[in-house]
Image (cartoon, rainbow, N blue to C red; front, top):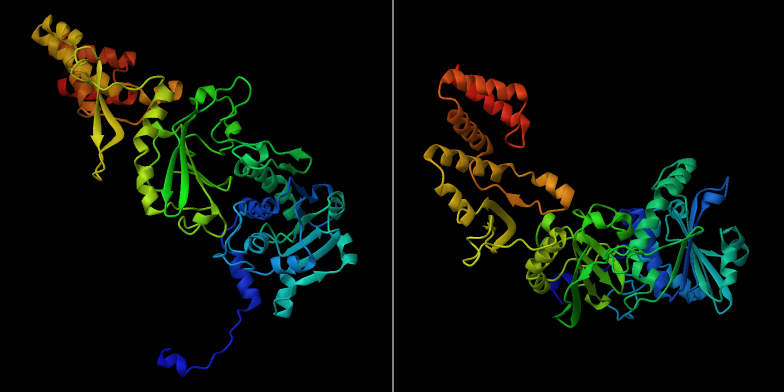
Length: 515
């Protein structure tokens, strides 16, 4: 023991209850992630039914949200322990099906959204209840948990639903100060905004449990009278007549003592997906491409390439399923909200190596065929050649390339051999203009073609000007005739560059040079 410790006197310094709880309320939960965190407890309790009920049908009551399940429930002592903050060690050994980690989720998630958390649980035919009320904590200045007596159960909304189960737990949120200080506005925001968005979120995050796929237990989810429908981000089981996604080769990586399963998927092209909502992704294909990380069948992170590479149009149909278990929480930097995970360095390198496979599969699905590079055997047949651009970071070629008309094309060589010098100049400048004027954006929108192309040759304006000048000079010998030809083109509003404003500027410059 060091000298300064030998000379010290221990002083107990408990945190101020109100300040501590207010700090924990600001941990970063959203309404959706907070509800999902509470539902994790229901799944860990082996529930087969989970119901969410709100105050929408209770006119005159203060807004509330009830989450009720038919899980194993808790005894009185177990409930009081569960209501303690940090009631479990994050280093403890957990069941494979346990979706928790820090022993904070129920309390921290709930109190991030409301000021009063009530939990009623039923086990062995007995009900127990407890309540955290932040107003009581503030007034008392102490960590006062309210132990609810049986006669107080009747004041808890939907308490009668517990009578239908042999065991289960009811969680009730009230006093939604995170929404508004006005109870009427709380009700409008809860019912009009939060619940509709929550339905989409839960349908995605727990889609494996809702559908009972991938080895996840089948669980019935209801929000009010509506039964949730799984939103599968991989479109593995599409609705009738809808195309399915294309799975790739599954890979199994061993990282330390844990295994990680990785499987890439390629979605159908966008014009074949009639309703993007069927994917449950809540955004465009471009915005939601990336890794989808599952922990014990629960989706915890999605729509990101985890900093390994940037989003690109060529990969927008790509989804990569990554499955981890709860033994790998620390290696993945899992936070309390279970909404963010970072792969360990060893796995990051392995995932990076999958990039090229992912890009090729997505591009091939979008366009119907891979873009063929010009090789020695086909260089006289191909009309275009693709020049891959190197990554400035030194990691090899990127998914971006330059398209240009193949100068080795036999057809083009035959055409050039038949032209005089003036005609050859016109053709060459026009071919350069074609390379610059291809309407990539229009093609992408119409045919879902890849849009990550780069223009290789000289600026579009100079190419357009060179073509127009050579063309007009081949038709008109005198400056007067050339000037009149340019004026006619301007009057006709002709577009030579797939950009009418650019064409007008070029014509005006050529007119100015002749005047």
